[in-house]
Amino acid sequence: MARWLVIFGVLCIVIGLAWPWIEKLGLGRLPGDVHIERDGFHFYFPIVTCLIISAVVSLLLWLLRR
Image (cartoon, rainbow, N blue to C red; front, top):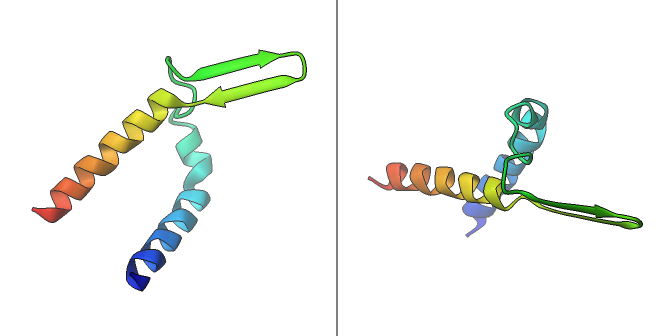
């Protein structure tokens, strides 16, 4: 369990450091991401981005387990 927590922490740090380059890919602004903005209210839920990231992570984990 401790090994997985360390791996998860390192992965979060790597993603945080790489975020300026990841942001240029357009993730978070895809068609289908919910963005509602009204007076005094702002709601954003990147549902399509979450689906794509989930599919990529699932594919990577599947490939690593083979």
